[in-house]
Structures are given as structure tokens and as C-alpha cells.
Length: 180
Ligand SMILES: Cc1cc2nc3c(=O)[nH]c(=O)nc-3n(C[C@H](O)[C@H](O)[C@H](O)COP(=O)(O)O)c2cc1C
Image (cartoon, rainbow, N blue to C red; front, side, top):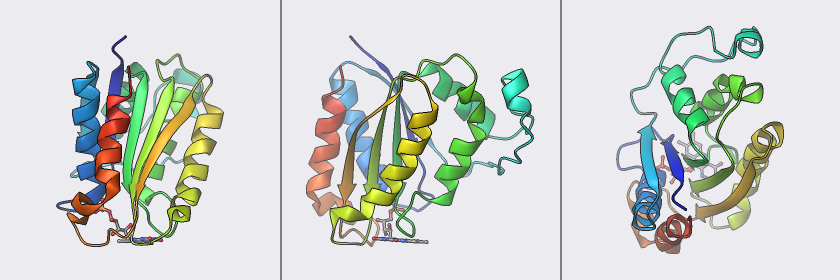
């Protein structure tokens, strides 16, 4: 059955490698008949969570900026796909900031059941993605009924556009296509 998928591309770089993976995933997922929405954090204003806890009482974040609309889309999607560069062997700060701002999902009804991770890095080893996957697993652990279903990591991709040469390019397409 077709799923409602939200792809969140978190790199702010032009010709971003992880965004290229995100579009390949999108292509595969659409071909498999899913309903796919693509959001980029480029140009978005997203403040840090200030930990006030109001979202746990009201189900909404008190801060008004571009995070609110993205979090609403997240809540309505069955599948969340995170595309991101690896920064200091972790997820980039802008991705973590959005996850923190989505804290209302912890206490409100939402459609999210699966998540996928698409990452790119300079390192030659797949172990580079261990830190980010641990971080995303922490998020998943806090959301009931959500599973981290798969990931793709493109290694040795430092300069923009270099992911086109990586086996991860096809892997991202295949992962998207596998969703049904
Ligand atoms: C602030 C910063 C930190 C980075 N840290 C790492 C790192 O810890 N390990 C690594 O392999 N690559 C690291 N990189 C390289 C990026 O992960 C790599 O260039 C990636 O392809 C960028 O993806 P993008 O084009 O989607 O932004 C770092 C790059 C930046 C700008």
C-alpha cells in the first residue's frame, strides 16, 4: 500500500551530496507508488528548543518559526527520511535542532512508523555513520511504534556532487523503491 513519505534534506550546501541521495530516494519511492514530499532546510529559520516544556502540555511549540510547518508535516507522515552530511561523526546541528523542536511528537498522536537515514561523509569507512545512527536511534526510541528501517552512507564524498560516483547513489534509489 502506498505510504506518505516526508524527506527532510538538512544540508545547507549548494550541490549537496546528501540532497542528491535524497532526490534519488524520492525518485525510487515515487516509482514504487508512494506519496512523497520533499523539504529542504535551506533558507529556513529554526531556533533552538528552549526546553520550556509547553509542547508537552499544549501539543504545540511556543516558538513561531519555520520549524512548526515542518513538524506538522512530520506528524502527518508515515515515513520520515533524513538526508544529512556527517559533521564531526554525528548528525549536523541543524538536523538535531529540528529533532529537538519536534518534541511535541513525543506526546501527541502522529502517523510516523518508519524512518530512514541517508548520509554522506569524507571518511572512507562505513563506521563513520555509527554516531549519527546512534543519534537517530535515540529519537526513534522516544517515539512509540517507530522503527529505523534502513540507511545509506556514501563514504569518500567530500566535494559537492561527488556522490554521483558512489555506489550509494544507486543504493538510495533502491531503498526508496523498496518502500511499499
Ligand atoms: C563542519 C563539517 C564537519 C564535518 N565532519 C566530518 C566528519 O566528522 N567525518 C567525515 O567523514 N566528514 C566530515 N565532513 C565532510 C562532509 O560530511 C562531506 O563533505 C559531505 O559529503 C557533505 O555533505 P553535503 O554535500 O550533503 O553537505 C564535515 C564537513 C563539515 C563542513
